[in-house]
Length: 271
Image (cartoon, rainbow, N blue to C red; front, side, top):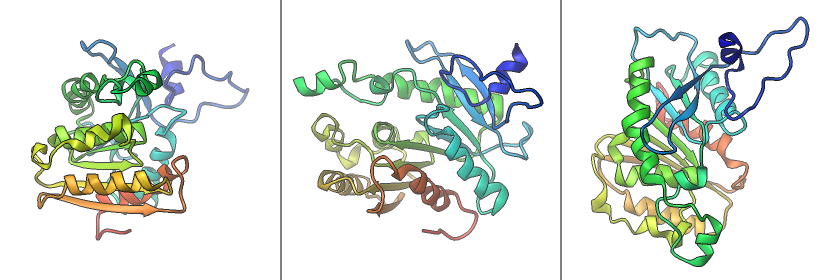
C-alpha cells in the first residue's frame, strides 16, 4: 500500500489512482507528503517535485506553490522548472512544494467581507492569518528539516492565491526571498489590502518581486499600480509585466515562465 501511495505522486484530493493497464507502470513526477499542524484546518497534503540531482546532503532552494494540487498548478509549474534546470540549464535546480488546498476561499482572504455582497460571496472568508502562520511555523520548518530546503525561497500565487502572496509580501515580507504574483485579486473587500501603508513593510532587504497581470480590465491595472507604489523601496527589486494577450484564465503558465526566469536565472535577467 505504501508503494501504491508513493506511485500516485502528484495527487491531492484524488480518491483513487486510475486502474493499472497491463504492461505499464505509473509515471513519476514527484512524491506526496503530509504536514501536520496544530492550527485548526491547516494540516494538509503536499505535492513535492525533487530535482534530478537531489540529495539530502545539499541545501536546496525551494519554490512554494499555492494552488499546488494535481488539478491546479503543480504539474505545469514543475514542467517549467524542469525545462529551465534540466534542458536549457538557465536556472539552478530547486525543490517545488505544491501546497494542496483545504479551504481556498477561507485561507487566501485576509478579512471577512465588509459588505453583504462580499459575505454572501465568501461566507467563511478571513482565514489568511491562520494559513500564513501555518506557512511560517509548520510548513517552512518541515521542508527545511526533512528535505534540507534551506536555500532561497520563492512564493508563487495567482488570483486569490496572488492576494494571499501579496498579503505575505506586505505584512510578512521576510518570510520568503522572492515573490511571483500573478493577477492578484486585489479587488477583494473594496481593495482593503492596498490600504496598508508603505511603512508596514518589514524585513524587505534584498527581496525580489515579479508582478504580472493580463488583459483584465481597468481595475486590475489600477490596483497593480497601487501595489507597485506601496512596495516601492530601495531594498525591494520589483519587475512588472503587463501581458495584454493573456486573460485571467490563461496568464499563469506564461507569467510563471517569465517570472521564474527573471527571479532565479543563473545569468542576466531575461524578459
